[in-house]
Length: 219
Image 1: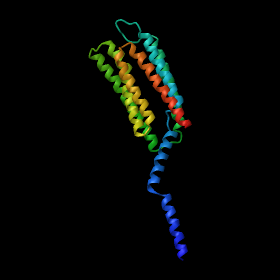
Image 2: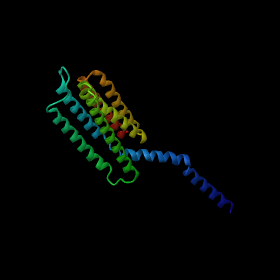
Image 3: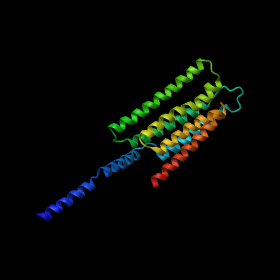
Image 4: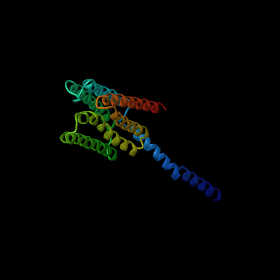
């Protein structure tokens, strides 16, 4: 009986060690991070597509406004280029999102929809404020230059940084904050150069982000 009792105690001790609360908490956190990475819609390919898109869009606008004295803002065929770039980026993002969220439901899906809602509200607010600046008689250098080149990225980047922070996505958080910094600093270059500086700067950030994503996947 004594031997049997000792074996039962040893077995109980092993089970207790196997279900140690600290080990279980560590495993839960690790599993959560892995799940977030598996359902992450910010893939390296999508990051590269966005890098090319922001460079093409902002570069096209800069090309259309270079040499303007006084500054009047982008006009002409540039809008066709920008709309095409934005449309292609949205389609690519939608395809990646649909594949990444296939079969996903519950809190994860609701969280992603909430993030999308935040971005929609933020960008609508940016556009409305731009209209308010125009109605207030603010000059074209701000209304059609510095503000539309920087404000959307500052607001969107800040919202994206918050979303990454909530998911403990530290690499994405760093990239989002870098985009905010690039947009804010580029605003000091003036209504013409701001388009080129922002486009090149954000493109480099996104390319670096994609490279870091690939490195982490291999690691």
